Image (cartoon, rainbow, N blue to C red):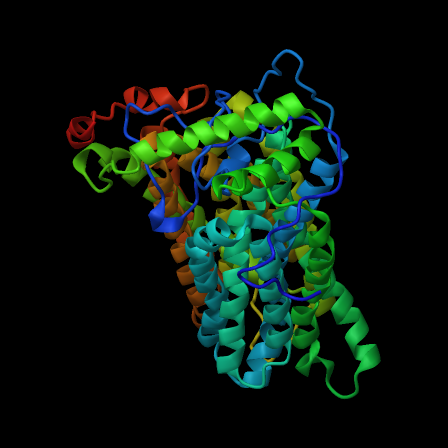
Length: 558
């Protein structure tokens, strides 16, 4: 398969038929170039209300919409087909593989720590920066994803992302020096960031309204599955490499671990030709006939397809009319929601979740487990992460955001406090020479505490953050608000990922977990005293519910 060129051949419509209609979603992802409607414009479509509207360059919901739409409240209109279209399901699964690679990339580096440090002769702090370079790339990829997707199409850019994944995995595996390793991790991170935006976007644009929440939720679920798969892959490499290489296997194991990401990437690239370009993008580009053809193949109904096309074209005119009005963002009226977004995003990473995901095998080794057991325990907490995520997504719209946050925060405090005390008073951490002792009762308490920590995160902050960010901002500034939350989240993730291994090496794990514990005490007070419950509040009513003032400048511009 060759990489499509930027011009020339248009995306090919699929040759399959069947299935339900696909209403147009109204969220546009274009980094800082997002168009914003004024306060009197219709609210963007979200789970609370089914609106038939689509922007000029409609990309659909961002990753922050995934969990928000996890429980669909759409009620089928008379005559609407609600059975699952095999083409839609298959295409959604293919797009979700991008999320799986996202999760795989997050966790696979966890098994390479000691090998990379030994091979390049670097400190733990320097290694932390090597890991963090991928997160820097993720920020870049998430910011730039919208523009090429608008210009060249969702499907074509997904193919480009696949090649970025492939290049990142293979080039990091053969990197001859540290600088190239960091450069190639940055490159792969760009692909991860773009996939984190475009995979759920593509799915949302082809999914029927009654199934959209669950289908888009496949992407978030795939991220968690990717994390588990990476941990299991590291175990397999650990077992196989000594049998196929001569000499000290620890010097090359890390290369095989990083190269393993090429396997799901090749599957992703092989399956991409079987999916369609989305009808919304085709219509937004003025290619009405192609958009109608794809819409009819996805819906199997000429009337439904015609209705969708008409609605998109009508919304194009509305967007053009509103394009001149862009509401101010960093103003006093928005201070409350800006601070809420920064707080929940920062607390998400101050819990230490990325430190655990990236360095789980090393934490288990310090607790007294040998190398093989450390990798197996890491896979175990990956499984806990998956189960807790499924549980949280299934009940978040019933029990509310604050209740999940409270439960998760209490779990944070119990688990982090236990880890800090165990590493401070009971467990004698292993020396840098790699020696390990026999795991005792305290070692298994570490395992239990880490499992509780992962479950608490998946059940609380991990499931609530993107929902909360997608809800609290008024429609006129929602995309910029979500971008601010994402930027805060990934920046904090990069800093903590960089610093954590150095702290552990110099002071010990107790210091790191103690710091996270103190931060989570702050989170508990924030949830109890500050965080609003947004469950059941219509997005168009959020301004009044949160007590936000009407922006006079935006009103005047109308």
